[in-house]
Length: 166
Image (cartoon, rainbow, N blue to C red):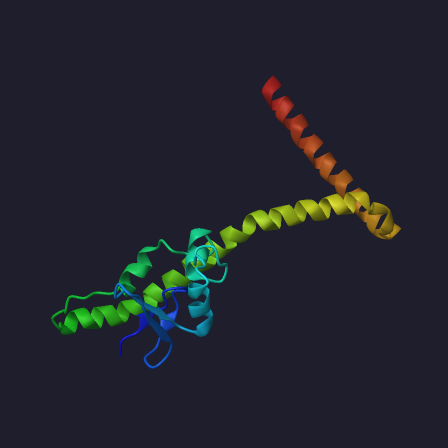
């Protein structure tokens, strides 16, 4: 069973699915669905259309450069069957998928870090502006918490100054 890739969005095309377009110079374009075919006919660039794989790779949304992808690459050279090699490969597959999953989670969390930081800054700024809207009980607890933090910092600074003098 030969699985093709869509020229526009890079998704997998299974046998009996999709559309083929053959240009005058005998170049074959395969599309997974009419959406991709129509975008191709409108001469849209897949790198500028947000839902395509090319856009996601170009803008750092997907993990593209990873050694685990090397195991899935297409090989046109036939390989001689070796029982030991096949056994080792089958044992390695779960480990490789786990490594890829962990790296993907790390990639996603790194992508979200700047947004989370901006959101926290925005929330703290909003809290500073609208502090009067909070109940007085919450405000008094926050003020006492800030005071205790300041006391701890001052105590630590004094001990450091004393240590330097001695």
